[in-house]
Amino acid sequence: MPAARPPEHSAARRAGYVDIGEAARASGVSAKMIRHYEEIGLVPPAGRTAAGYRVYGPSDVHRLRFVKRARELGFSMEEIGKLLALWNDRRRKSSEVKRLALEHVAELERKISELEAMRGTLMQLAHHCHGDQRPDCPILEDLARGEPA
Amino acid sequence: MPAARPPEHSAARRAGYVDIGEAARASGVSAKMIRHYEEIGLVPPAGRTAAGYRVYGPSDVHRLRFVKRARELGFSMEEIGKLLALWNDRRRKSSEVKRLALEHVAELERKISELEAMRGTLMQLAHHCHGDQRPDCPILEDLARGEPA
DNA sequence: GCTTGACCTTCCCATGATGGGAGGGTAGAG
DNA sequence: CTCTACCCTCCCATCATGGGAAGGTCAAGC
Image 1 (cartoon, rainbow over the protein chains, first blue to last red):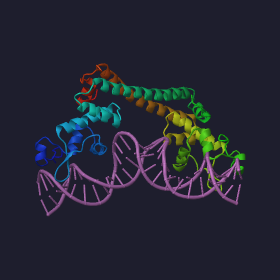
Image 2 (image 1 turned 30 degrees about the vertical axis):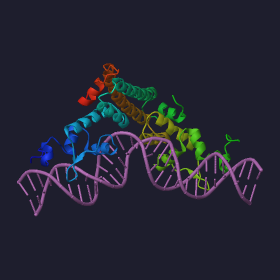
Image 3 (image 1 turned 60 degrees about the horizontal axis):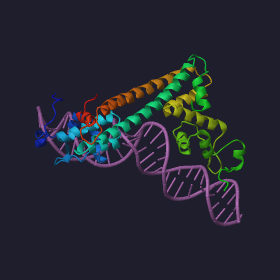
C-alpha cells in the first residue's frame, strides 16, 4: 500500500501547483479552513482545474502559512487581513505593522488580566474550602452571595 | 414621565414575584440570557402568568445571580450546571465543589500560559521593529517565515 | 373606553473560528 | 472497470451572546 505516495494530478502539479490537501499539509491550515478563508475574502480565490479542483502555487501556500502563524499568535481574522495587506504592500511603513502588533499585545494583556483575576479569586476561595465530606463550602457561598470579588 | 416607576403587574408582584425584566435587573443577567438558560435547561422553566409572562420568585432571582457570578469567574455553562446541582444538594461533599473549582483554575492557567506565550513572542518581535517610515519589519518576517517561535 | 408606551412573547439570524458529515464527482493505480 | 483517496458544495453544530421582527399585554393618562 503506497499510501504515503500522493497522486500526481495532471500537468498542474508538475508546474509546482498542488491541490487543497497538499496545501493544507504544507501550510498547517486545514482544507476546511482554506475554503473558509477564501469564502470570507481573507485570501484570493484559488485557481481551478477543469474539474473544479482548487490549485495552489508556492506563493499561495506561503500566504496560508503566514495566516497560520498569525493565528497562532492570536490575531483575529480581521487583523490578519490587515497584516496580509501590509505584507503585500512594498511601500508599507513598519510603524503600521508595529502599531497593529502592539494593539494586539494590549488586547492579550487585557485578557490575561481578566483570567488572572478569575484565577486569583478562585484560588482564594478554594484555599478556604476544606474539600472534605462536609457540604460547607466557601466557594458556593461566594457564588450564592453573587457579589463580585 | 414616571419612567423609573416600574408597573405593578397584578397580584403576583405583590407576592414577591417579578417579571423577566425585573429579574434581569436584579440578577445582572439579561432577559435574553434568562430565556436562553431556561431553554437549555440550566435553570428550571419559570412560572407563567395567565397571559404567558414569565414570573420569578426571590429564589429564582437568587439562582440567576449565582449563575451570573459563576460566569464572571469564567465557568462554562456545563460547569455551572454542575455547580447549581451541588448548590442544591444539601448532602454534597465540599470536595466535589473544590475539585470543580481547581479544575477550572487549571484551565484558566492553561489559557493564561497560551496568551502569555503569544504576548512574549509579539513583544520580542515588536521590540526589534523600528516602527518608522521604512517597510522593513521583523514582525512580518516572522509571520512570513511561518515557523513557531 | 381608548390610546400610548413600555413591556412581554416567540422565532429567526448573526457573531468567530472551527469541525463534522452527507451526497456526489474525479484522478490515478491495479 | 473498479477501487481508493481525494475533491466539490451545502448544511449543521459548537459557545455565549445580542439584534431585531411581528405580535400580544399591562398600567396609566385622558
